[in-house]
Length: 360
Image 1 (cartoon, helix red, strand yellow):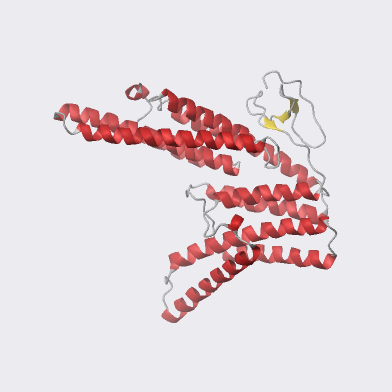
Image 2: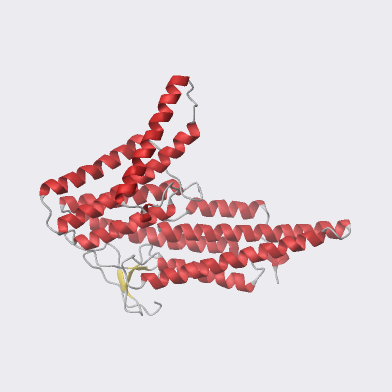
């Protein structure tokens, strides 16, 4: 990409378009001088219903992969999903009745909140399924009455979710999960409504917004790398694997799920992530053994050795945290700025800014 051709503008994006050395077109939303180039895609016409379905499916998969939920919607039939939603509704009603009869406002509060979150996730998952179903039926020429029925079901699920007034959670519970989740819920709704109304401009706006978010996400991956670069020098293999994983994540998040390059890029990223986690876990286990041996030394040497081992374990824990942040970015394609701030704080609190004690 260093030998990219001169930029130009096209009608379907507000950003300059650059042709890379690989022949693909890229945009530079952050005007980074080529540092954060994002793969450009032709904006589909709103009447291209298969393309619209794929965009919504992309959000659906990322949402369900990221969010904390009580069921596996990707392997749940529509009928079982409907029953699951009814069961969660019944449980909420039962809690409300018991609370009223016991006159205890705090009755099963935690259970109620978890049930609301899981019901909310199920409603969002079903609504996205219904959106894709609507577009499929429209594609095959279903009559207006059938389309209206599906549309009303989508609308009903979204209204019920809003009435729950609950914040969904990511699986790791980071502070900025809510922002990513709200986008993964809101963006497919915008695409769906644009399709229903036949409006092209929201699709163009979606693509430009997507480019900007991905560029910011790529920058956040670099920030996570930089945060640990100064402290995690204990093992060259871990270093190289971590760096390769981060670069693979930056490539992966640019690519749409339907792109022929996506499966290979996803496979490469996941393999490097698994390798990084395995290497970090192995190193922590080895340090645990080393820590056991510290106890046999005289007090001054014991204290110095214990501190060194503890610092190394904490540094590896920070690296694992950075790996998790990058994974969440790879799933959501959202910057995780708060996660990186937390990581920097962990490093600062432990005074790991000087890597000399970690060198090997």
